[in-house]
Amino acid sequence: MENTYDAIVIGGGHNGLISGAFFAKGGARTVIVEARDKVGGAADTSSPWPDHADFKVTTYSYVMSLMPPTIIRELNLERHGYKVTPFGPYYQSYPDGRSIKIYADDAKKNYESISQFSKRDADTIPKWDAWLSGVASVLGPLLLQVPPKRGGGGKAIRGSARPIPVGGRGDRGGEGRIAHIDKTMKYGDQTRPGGARQRACRLVFRGIGAQGGQQRPEFVA
Image (cartoon, rainbow, N blue to C red; front, top):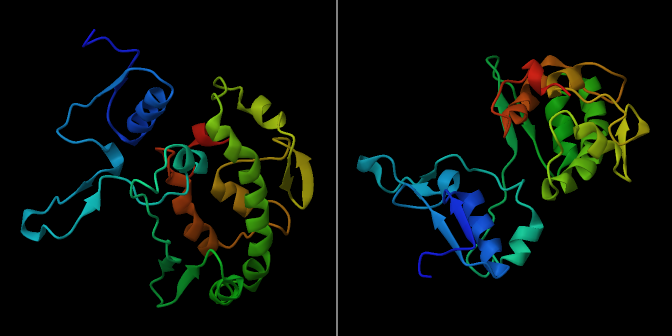
């Protein structure tokens, strides 16, 4: 019985560790198998430069925006040392010496920063952020559900009880046009900032978790 398990998790990255923890919490005799000499995967901490051992970095983890609060609560992560350091403003510099700073909690500073390049974009960005928040309120809960079959995501979105506000209207989940972020920002009505610099500033978020470029057609909904 010593080598008999109810659940065997291959890979001790952050997803494997979480899966293993929930298996064990549910009463399953669980083992996590990791090829390296340390666990953590993309979220591990290492010192890759021998001459500068004080510089510690993670392999690929940097923000915690996709960490579901339910995992934090149910695994008591804060009791085990989980602590979040607030992320600073997003910063984009340009060759002419100007720059854009985007704050998560200061609309006035955002307006002043963006209006250097486009007053229209500065006026529009609060509407864009509200639209994006509406999309997130529908799609966010899907992170904790069984993923839909390939090509069937629209049904899961349309089945949501909450509307996605698109173009100033409340379109029932998934009925509004959602595409890659550059196209979504560039086209449409007056609720979407279309300036090239503003789009470039936001395009970095398109690559997070997508394993692809900003306009690869297979990522266009």
